[in-house]
Length: 120
Length: 108
Image 1 (spheres, rainbow over the protein chains, first blue to last red):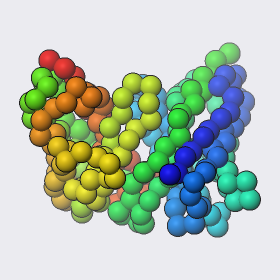
Image 2: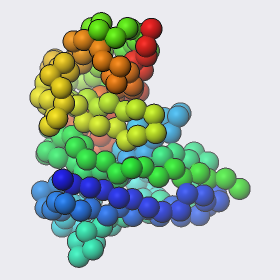
Image 3: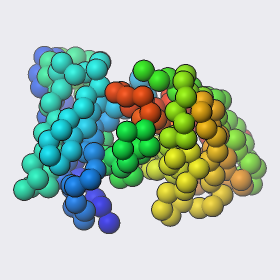
Image 4: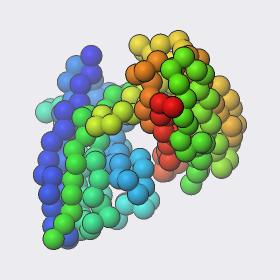
């Protein structure tokens, strides 16, 4: 049974960098898309981006200039860095596993979520 | 970017009743739509993928239908644990992957 366990700082000041890590256990990195999604009251669920085992990434165009997703296969972990945060980045952040390809695609496993608050 | 519009925003029903939730896409997504359930304080849970396939462990009272731009999630007879938020999601035209804004299913 795949499990995703995530962690990271929950309180940031404006202009700082958000850093979260997700550890995968009970499965394989191969053949899936390792994804970050966030949820805020104002914008609902928002896809941030994804990475494959080989390091190929895709990002939401609205966040692309500030986002880096990395993968560490030897540690079974992947991470999210979001630079220059503002209050608008306050949200619950989830890691998830994406299954499928191109059009047919879904998220079958999710981390527990991390509330990140940006406040001065 | 494909916009997914869910309706109604809130649905008030009683246990035992049938629930019908809608998701409309701004352009065709073929049959490539997924549905999720989310309860307060929890991560979303996959219910349906490819518009009509139930995910592992999902009760058969949940069913999905539709193709193109119009999709429906039906719960045939509501159980108390079904009252939650429901979201649809697509990846046919990406980036970005998009979600609907959600339907809140509440107890009447």
